[in-house]
Length: 76
Image (cartoon, rainbow, N blue to C red; front, side, top):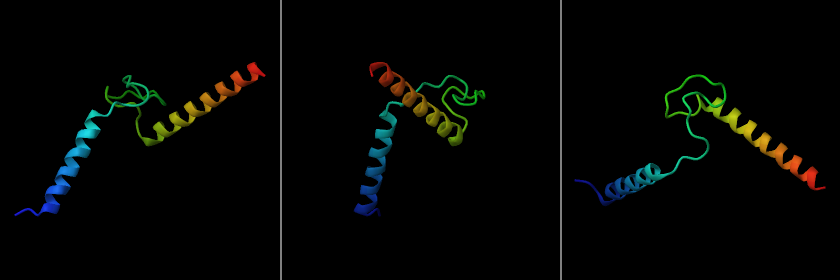
């Protein structure tokens, strides 16, 4: 027989899974290739692995920072 704690834990997991399934993906859409190294991938993935994802995110942040600096220099 299940305890009330087991039931609560299952309900919590169900709610978490439901929230994750409804979450909208962030960032760019998958294009069939790794967004960093261009290695062919299935259509659901955006990067080969965490390293490619991390490198891509770092480059995106650096690019955004350069763009902000460029715009700031145009205003000054």
